[in-house]
Image 1 (tube, one colour):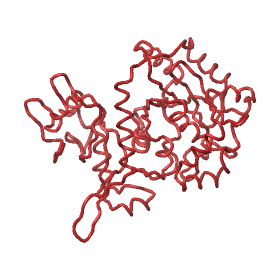
Image 2 (cartoon, one colour; image 1 turned 90 degrees about the vertical axis):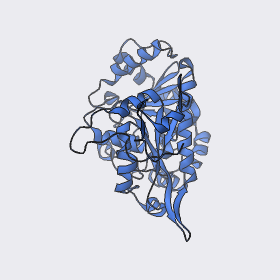
Image 3 (cartoon, one colour; image 1 turned 45 degrees about the vertical axis):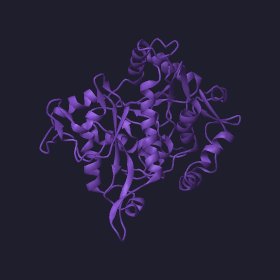
Image 4 (tube, one colour; image 1 turned 135 degrees about the vertical axis):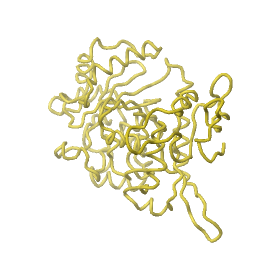
Length: 378
């Protein structure tokens, strides 16, 4: 559907004219909307809070995920060579303002290029494929029955200490996760027998396997919830862009790395609960001060870190991931600040998996990192 603006509204229905192509008498007949129109649907107040306007009800009636596919006004070359990524104008028009509508920010799919005849938008095939993959994944979530959905929950564990598992800002992560799991169970999700309390959940998880080397034993590594054979990881590693392979190898040596390995496998700490899996986010690095590396912008992630996210997607078969509370480290991995390419670690690791992220409301700055660098639903 072609439209000049989503502000053009049918007064009778209160919907943008473009939305009329997606809805019938029984509701929407699409599963996902990919939008390339810039700006927000409703007016944004530059001098204070923006109140909920007509667009909120219009989007509620449409009732589908809206993916913002970015058509950049930049040329591709400056974007590719920039650590910032998109320029301020693109960021405002195609990221910040669309966020007022709750659109999920994806990646640049085209750039404005000039030739002798004309100026036009030139697509970037791998970025188009990324948006298409996201759309397919979100559409699938609408059709897979709840009992068959496989959902991974990831606790923060930045310093790898067992005492700091799930240390989210403003959130009792274990208790909150257990409440969420009970709610999902009531909606038909297959979660098996749940622990009686959040504390019991953490104890079960740590007893099985953690990343705290003070207590970790070879026996625990052997019964880790996820175990990736070295040969499988070597194949996955070869599928990364060569630039990322080189950075990881330079920092951490050749695959599979030296940490959390056991009997020919990379061990991934977690606890299986039916079709849910509760996992620990791997340390950002090791052999150095964990607090110093938490936000280090140029430190390549470890082989173990990549193994977790790739295994969730292509080993365990997750339909979606939930990062439980502010905040993990995926959205802080090296790469462009905004408008990610295939050579950015968050994009390469997460791929097209939907990411949901309960996040404290009083820190929109860091929440924006997850939205803009990991297509998170915050």
